[in-house]
Length: 228
Image 1 (cartoon, rainbow, N blue to C red):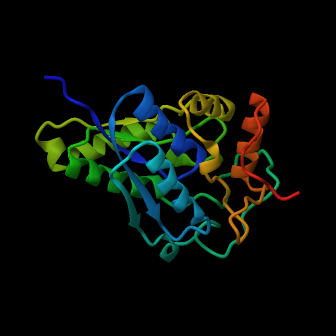
Image 2: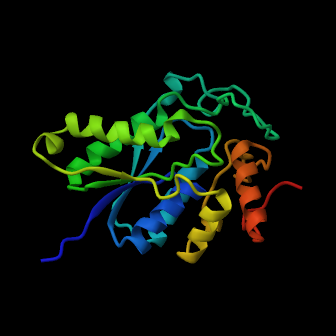
Image 3: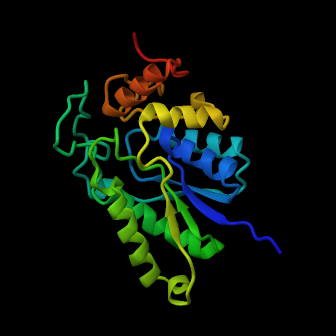
């Protein structure tokens, strides 16, 4: 009897995670549970986007887990520190890095996977045009899986767990092209780190920069509107 692979998709509501969900549903045919995190981020509008994207792809189990990362701080996304604007290439890890964010999120997603008998974690991490975050690297993902298998009941009983990061080596334009092919409406997604009070993207943070660059390279129009 054919069994369907179950997956837990980390769905922030941004461009990358939404594309990763489209890939898991449309290309892989996996039964997906989605999870977003309300972690005290200044761009909480992405939580609404995650619900809309999940609904579009027929997800019946979308969860929002609250984690107070503002109590840790030390990031411009979870404090009153200014968000860097007008991208400049640098080797330094920017202030938008949230300490141990993917480590925390993947741990919670692994717990959810164990609860719903899922064997795949799907994350939209990317190493080509991301902002220099160490928790987006393939070696981190590999190490996390080994740890999760050691530290869970499912793993100790011989269960399987893999991380799928289908966008890990793609350029932003390639990610957008994939999403468009899979029917993703990027007008539903939100990427800006520092949106205006009405949710309009600032157009100047790193996330806005990479997103606009990707659409431009692809010769496509970003459906989101930016300040003039």
